Image (cartoon, rainbow, N blue to C red; front, side, top):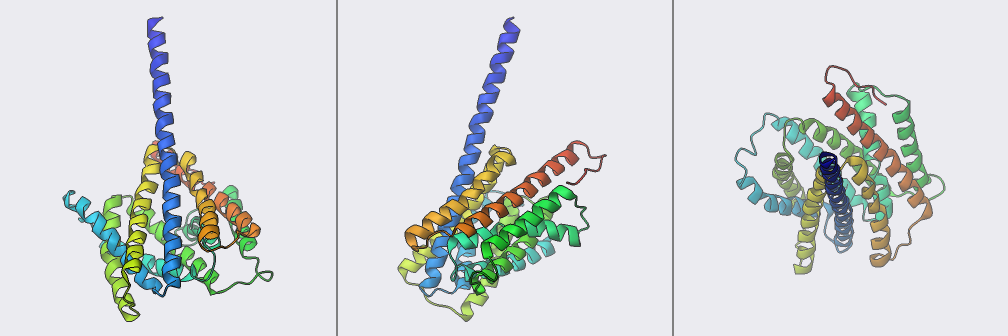
Length: 315
């Protein structure tokens, strides 16, 4: 009897501990979403004040590299890699994606940019099928179709004005989809810190050279905002990673949807833009589709890890 009571007590304590860590993971994801949206708002403010988008990319990469350097010094061998070419390609593609995104966010609302940004996991799945030979079955195909339907609802081609900002964001999302596939590949051999450091090392000089061609010397206020963008991006990425460390993906990923809420609130308070109902509806459909694909992918990988001799069935 005592053994049963102790076992029940231990199980209750384990469940409570798991519940606490899940809440921490959810808080990390929500905070990450807020930081990313705050950074995007500042990027838009900087562009409107005359700072070229590529210059913001440069400062964001530089500040991130500075913040990560102490951790690199405390981690011997962190830069050792056999995949320098992949890191380099990822850095170039990510630089192009960031420049496109920062350029696009100038001429559209934050909520529109965020809604279209949610298409990246859907494009990544499409690329994996087309170029990496991954099989696809009905459920994931339906999720992809729903995601693209959501994009059509958000953009309303033929019924609403589509400008170059929407085009830049879509190109940025497509490029980021390619980056997601490279991250997935690199993650099999490289730590998150190694990947982050190489991105900073590669991205900073690329963006620096391009920024020099259109350089605008920032005043102290703009310099503080540029530093803020780098800090929010670095801390946001850290909290995003920590969210998955503390809790299951299915528990925390839905909190990434709060980006749509934060972007609506920030847009209303700072830029005085009223959230568009069609954009919110389309963004919700896009997010749900992308979240399903991401969570399903994680389930398949977990199943493959538990049964390596049995090829997993794709959705």
